Length: 65
Image 1 (cartoon, rainbow, N blue to C red):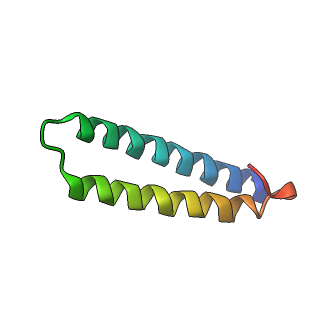
Image 2 (image 1 turned 30 degrees about the vertical axis):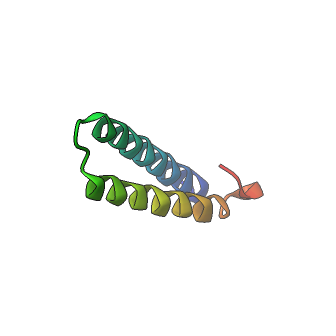
């Protein structure tokens, strides 16, 4: 498998990871008493994944996803 294809697969996986955590945040915020610690944890993980997506996208031709 080529390098670009591997990068695109990793990026796709990270984007899916972001979607899952955003959904978890929405569910948790809908509760009567949301757990703010969990929400903050997921927000931090989303931010880290977004940073990684940007860094990996720069490795691709044209520097984009």
